Length: 166
View 1 (spheres, rainbow, N blue to C red):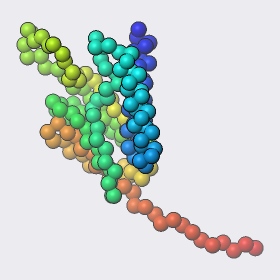
View 2 (cartoon, one colour):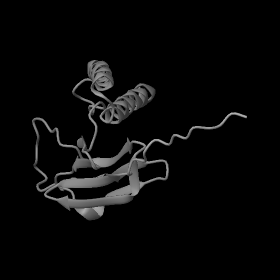
View 3 (cartoon, helix red, strand yellow):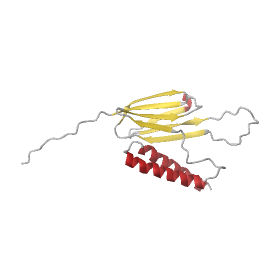
View 4 (cartoon, one colour):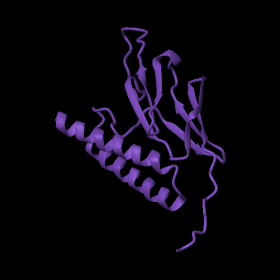
């Protein structure tokens, strides 16, 4: 059973990574990746029942924008303190957000009919596009939303030089 759950978790994470990377592609490629994401989510959802955590759900939920001069990523982290969130970037343009959303039980007699809120450790990885300037990143955390702004590298004009043939 652990092997099956592990494989399902990997499928869910891979499909979300494929989807996240697709947000920076053109619309035709993006449509195909959205369909692939939906397919993976449906497979995982069918294999899981309500007694298990829904492995196809990715936390934190993320909105990504591709603007003219920068990329904006917004991570939904309701109920978390900014000191419980870690944000990092590597030279190969891999952005990682990780942390732990802790559950604060208020009453020992709390009984839930259904509980969908995420609690626990998380790790979300986003591959940034080639033109992302990892030296120009800013972030701010307000009202449960972590916003990461990444400037784009200035595009160089294509180089062309006619060469003499001897």
